[in-house]
Image (cartoon, rainbow, N blue to C red):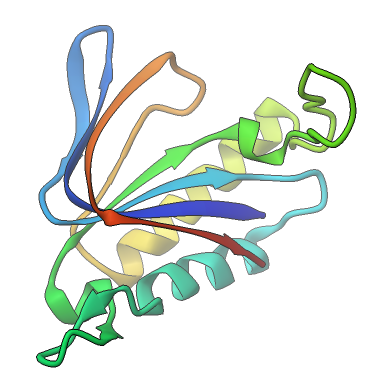
Length: 145
């Protein structure tokens, strides 16, 4: 399981021209699910995202997490994160979890995130989404569990 997280000033996800999820300041997290991933890993990933210290303290040191600053969390499913890219000129999506299993696991991941923290917003699993974000920093991190 992988996530690319971005510290954002604002972010939103639209499907067919309609905003389906949006946050102001917070973390935009793209989530990739692999064949062997499960709910235990999903919970670990959410816990890691919520605790990851990417906000500055009074001295400017990255020492605060999204919960401490009261920012939002926008979760977007992204199977392309699981692609193998080490050979050739075309990504191999074989390592990604099958869509039906991934949809169920992503829903459980979102439910867990909502139990642990608010506000949480999401895109629509499997939809053709348009993501808009203002990345602060820019600050992007790849997290794996």
